[in-house]
Length: 113
Image 1 (cartoon, helix red, strand yellow):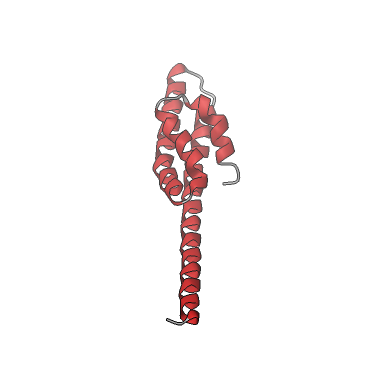
Image 2 (tube, rainbow, N blue to C red; image 1 turned 30 degrees about the horizontal axis):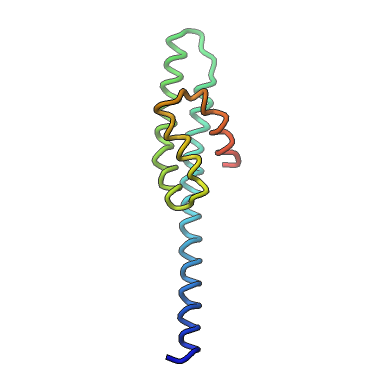
């Protein structure tokens, strides 16, 4: 092979890699945007004032369900783009840690989405 063909082949591979990486980052951003919609709904539900203990427990349960909807989306996004691993890790803790303890981190991780 001559030098020009080798250069063209390497250049083509580099351009293709950049294009594919750009597509996966865009998809990851869309997934995180949707996940953060669930997170924001969850936080809003969690923070709703409740007049009774039963209503408060119901709000907490509804908030937990919203967080669980966000987890698979954040997991896929984290697999596609490492910058979303923190959100995925925080959401994965929601089954063990009360949401009230996660709200600050979730707000920061979903800021701008």
